[in-house]
Amino acid sequence: MTPTTIQVIGTILFATAITHTFATSFFQHLAHRRPAHAGLWHLLGEVEVVFGFWAAVLMAAMFITDGATAALRYIDAYPFIEPMFVFAIMVIAGSRPILQTARRSTQVLSRLLPLPSNVAFYVTVMAVVPLMGSLLTEAAAMTLAALILRDRFFRHGLSSNLQYATLGVLFVNVSIGGTLTPFAAPPILMVAATWQWDMTFMASTFGWKAAIAVFVNAVVLTVLFRRELAALPSEERQSDGAPTPFPLVAIHLFMLAGVVVFAHHPAIFMGLFLFFLGFAHAYERYQNRLLLREGLLVAFFLAGLEVLGGQQQWWLQPILSQLSEHAVFFGTTFLTAFTDNAALTYLGSLVDGLSDAFKYALVAGAVTGGGLTVIANAPNPAGLALLRNHFEEESVSPAKLALAALPPTIVAAAAFLLL
Image (cartoon, rainbow, N blue to C red; front, side, top):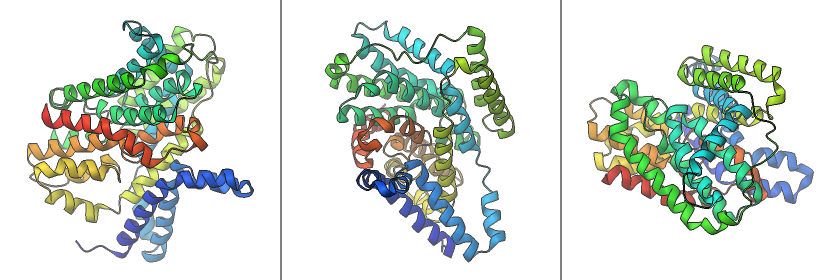
């Protein structure tokens, strides 16, 4: 397929945005070294800003090359449902009643393990919360896991190795942990209806393999860092305030469930979200600061990724369609590190006549590579936004993240290929 001028520009800008994500730590370093322009360097160092910024450049280029009508038609073709959904689910899941409920449930489960409290709590978070994503959606699971890890462990100043290892395993486990159902993981959601993948199919084909990989990753990571974890203070953060009355918890859970159920209907779930904001304000004594800024940044990131990603079909789809069933797994895993995995599976769903083995390999590869980079899986920016401040210079090195995510990625690949 011969690309148009704007497709070539879009691909160049997409590559530039990816390069920019790998350079965010450089800009954050400049912010500390040159305080006169610290605000500008901090802005350019925000991973969540990168794709939105370059998407704006793409739209400006489209106005110049194709005209206002074509540019507006292009942007209007994107309903931006996923960015709105992730924003709503991230803010609601991060509210105090939901977070307290998740933390206490995790604490109860961790006490069943004959391990030191910190070690038991850590392995429970890393193993159980990602699998909860199959019911709550991966975005909610990522938000809850990141907040729990932040308040219990990251605030005490973990070693750099443990920080990156935790983030890498968390990203991988959340990416594969949402495969027990057909609605929780974005790359599966893109193809489930087209390929008629239901709950039974997902649990029997993907889910049990993913659960094994999640537990292996969590256990191995915990064993490797058990001494550091055991030496940390075991008290909970006390700033969460008094326990929330059960009726308020029930209402929060109801609104969270409503947003999940109506995830494909923005008029409904955004209406529920606006009602949630009013309700949270009415009972603000039972709330912590809502994650509005973090949620908006993540939504901006995902919206920019959609706009830029829409110009990549001309080269991605031919590559996917020409791969063999065996090569598509590794090819998709590799490509996922440089583009959103949901975009890859969506492009695959447009190809007619795919075998069942090819479909399995495409989706399995997409979720396997979902932890290698921040842009690989839609919930990853949410986890990064909540944990980044605890890393050196408030910046996460993409190279170190990829290196930390590689071992759990290999475990996930082995589970999907060999089991």
